[in-house]
Image (cartoon, rainbow, N blue to C red; front, side):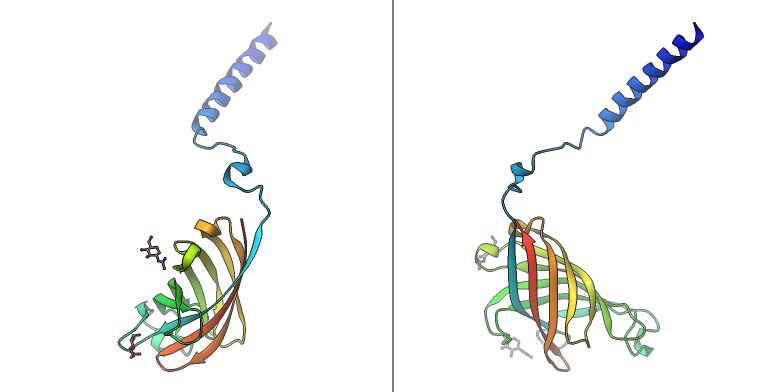
Length: 188
Ligand SMILES: *[C@@H]1O[C@H](CO)[C@@H](O)[C@H](O)[C@H]1NC(C)=O
Ligand SMILES: *[C@@H]1O[C@H](CO)[C@@H](O)[C@H](O)[C@H]1NC(C)=O
């Protein structure tokens, strides 16, 4: 009669441990995708705008917030960290309609070429997109003709977004760079 006793004890043990497990996971629930509108077909949107990065002067939109002791001796400014709040406009002209802002960080992450880690949100302010945003995390080798960065998510109309952004330098001066962005996103 030893074996039944052991079996019963084990069952007892597993019963109580599964009750404990269920209790500790009560904050997670499986819900129906249609409760969030995910039964609808995905939309593919193409966004096109111009990004203005101004590193000096009276309308500066990007500031250096950190660097390594060796950054200024590096030809690629390796270690520099910039915080930006860059306007996004409909046309290359800075005076054209502002559709949103690129808010976030770009940091020199390459010792051999001008290559930035971009961690930014495109926060849109126009019409029905006002208040919605896209999150971009990627690599930007600014001297390449076309740079591609993943869109890793979004908010508002862009919930569940994924896709990519392509950046092309439109013009480049000592204080201001204008970059053309084509962004392709799948969302609901
Ligand atoms: C700053 O922005 C204002 C308004 O857009 C503009 O009139 C002015 O020329 C700009 N200043 C510089 C230095 O670009
Ligand atoms: C965008 O939304 C903000 C906050 O709700 C509001 O203050 C602003 O006027 C809106 N802008 C446009 C262009 O609709």
